[in-house]
Length: 115
Image (cartoon, rainbow, N blue to C red; front, top):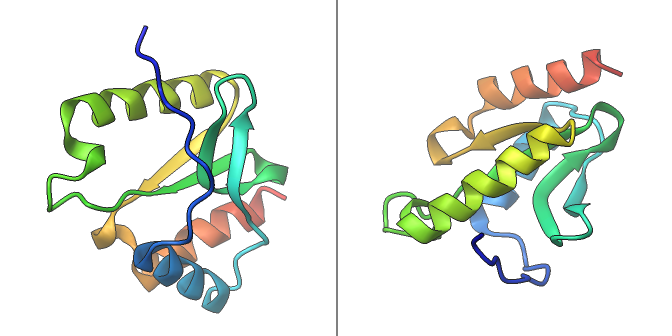
């Protein structure tokens, strides 16, 4: 089993700030930031909508050989998302190209409709 190191809450990235700005403009429901969805493994999601059990992950660094697309980081992410899904969470992963107003409006509408 791969050991994943604990990561303390980090300041929001520029991409997360863009997501939040668009989320607010779209009238999206309130989100929890850096939500710890698995206390045993201490995994966190960038954002969580607790009422609908949805996690939103903003995946940065995809064009610069960042953590999310190197083998060890990618594999750790797969484990995290698998466990989240098995625990009943829906996981939405957004990269830079998905953080657009039309996509954010659609996601906000889905989460709002599930309330």
